[in-house]
Image (tube, rainbow, N blue to C red; front, side, top):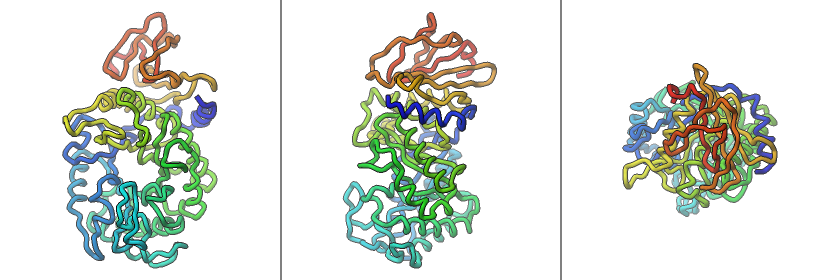
Length: 420
């Protein structure tokens, strides 16, 4: 384990100690409205529009003055039914409004110009920006206040196939979105364009250089929430990316604003093997909970390549989905008294501690160095009398020793029987 991981976690202990874990933290994407997570007893508090093609700017606004809200209204109805909030992602410029309507964009090499800025917006951020203004005005007039909780400006702008414009253009777009949206609903919150971390795709490069450029250009004045994406090769690496986000915020006077991870899982090009997915996901949740991040939008409930909690073909939860149900129950409402961190700068063993009412104590513990399926035995504090794994098994702890490995286990004290 890299030494800097332990150092970074230690810097976050003071800010996140004794924080009760809210159900609002657990948010996610899903592709199917009919198998929305709560229909499968999977809890989520908020949903983000980004993966749904029909909900992109380009498909909601197919020509000047032409709007189709059918799919958006249907999704909003589902979210209201289950008490979930909506994060609306504004991105993909319509071809008719694009500076390069025939240009190829995105990983699917779609030739629609969607990754280019509107054609009434200059590279320095000047211009009318009227096409975007008209869209946001129509959106807010149609939905009215209260239906859209968050508006996020664009998606992964540090990746050239997703944004071919300038930082100044996105700052101006954010300003216009904020002015119009808040005139209809003062409670709507505006989110930064979410950076992945600079590097090829979003693998393991942690620096947040694009975010720094956006804040340096004045973008922070127009946002309520700072966002990033958290696709990582090793679950704990997300802490470094969040730490660098906090550093950029501090440099440009944005400290204290909420931070959301609006996408995250393992890296799509290097998917976690099926048997490793429960342990990977739990470790990523634990890692993000150990930072100031207030919401994490898992990508995705029903995507077999990332997240992978639900199998559309069988209409059943995957083993990763069943594990999510377990650790959601362990975490939600608990108080994190010690954020997750390596036991020392040279140790691969990570731990974090939790409490609940009536003297309940728990500790998550795992080994980042061992391959999946291998374990090592460690001595643990004497108050823990049993542990749970991600496969619904409960074991007694004998002689204060437990086997640990890639998957975290959840140790509990004697007050555990009525808590989980």
